[in-house]
Image (cartoon, rainbow, N blue to C red):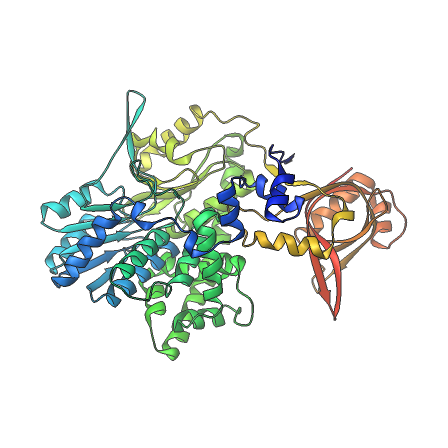
Length: 586
């Protein structure tokens, strides 16, 4: 059972509320998100492009731009090497379109997820040399490609790395020694000697800053052409939606809702969101996975070519194919999750602290999705391994208390390749090493039983009396929500349920008429797992009390709820309601 915690960060929210002319509730919400410094509050409340840090602070950005400008003048051939996920696809799109607009002779390649694996490899380097490529520029990869870039330099090629992943390191005498490649320029804010203050850009975000800077240097006015693409990447790569990412997503969503890109328009239509105001949810859970499906089950080049096409009929055909691929991916994911759960339960792996599951028949492209679902179910760091073309490959997803990248680093002698960050990683290894990896990760973990209990953090206790239309409108200034800026979550205790009603054709929505301990009435809605809620009432209070609740008859049912306030609009009527995210019956 999860534990509930009220965030109680100490800071003068009244002073913030007064200085910035916001409500005290909104001020507390900002503090809860570690936004309390004046400059951070100003950036958050007024996310404008003139508040972006100077791009020149980014290490090697000036050097890389000098190189690119000279290569364009010398008509040297440039090849972009990207990645097969949404961030990688958008990074390639921004780089390719940007460099093309500057007059560069440029093409691109995205490695095949199954055949090539992640990032630049020796074959890609050799092929580029054979085809007369002078310069390779990576995006969303390359920071850990030590040998591959060394090989490219030995062949006389110029290499620029743009990336956002953690810097690789080795440990010598319990000290981290960070590694670097021989690239001519490395643009990655996470480099220790990079003075760029904002470290949480996604790969496309790094590329976007680079292209914007080049555009300024070349006196071109096309730097805002790529806003919707960098916003899509930022949302789908699940980086913190604060600081510069908040500016990018706010402005990018505006651009997305009026995009002129033919491929995006077709995709939006095919995904059924044409006439909706597209927000973080639509990008993260509808458009993004559909774009991602090409890199998982086919080739990511297909999604990239959709964005590049100027043929409307072709765009619709490609968008439909992507949608169908994503439907196939969904079915495969459901089957894969079921197989992994069956194995965990059969082998009692849930008694471990780190799950390492080998399921050879799972398509390696969806191992990461499945690992994420399993991590959510058990609230445990999870690695899902499957049989690839060249041995065992897999993906890892973690919880906040466990740095997956560092823990895998301690086991690098068992791995053929690995990379990633604290919350997610990819890896490959020999089948003979699976059991040893599982054993070692569990033997040396410092995770406690307490760490594995799911935790829900509540912004504050908020009685129903405080909920009004003004508050709901004030809270909206915090949008868009995402990692690092979660949707506000409030709590209230000892709520009486006057009546419960099942709604919808499938009776999968529970509407509750609620009365607070102070007599304030409010409508509440539960969307998820209604049967479990009804079972909990029956278990706690008995079937008679459950039936009384469903029939609006007086009952003794009391519940604590976690919720966020909302407005219900139905048949022209507007009313206040709360969306109930979690509950506990007393």
